[in-house]
Image (cartoon, rainbow, N blue to C red; front, side):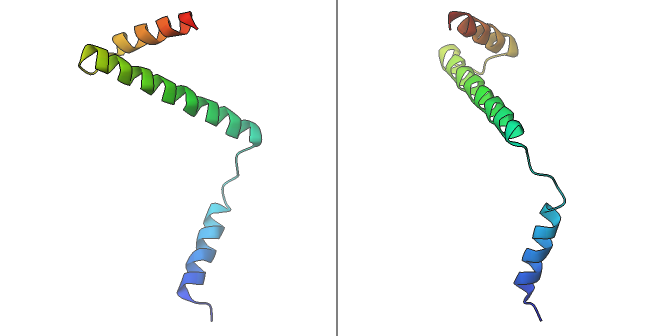
Length: 71
């Protein structure tokens, strides 16, 4: 008789096997999106330090657009 741990692992593996894995292209796309989101968050934090408060969406959008124009 299998142990309860083995049954749980088997159940878990069956459950995750129901969902398809990402393709390499999807992984790359998702990784790039995460990198972009991290860069935006870093810029938002820098703006917050400059303003000494949380930036509004307009502050953030303006600063991000200006930084993109410089690069």
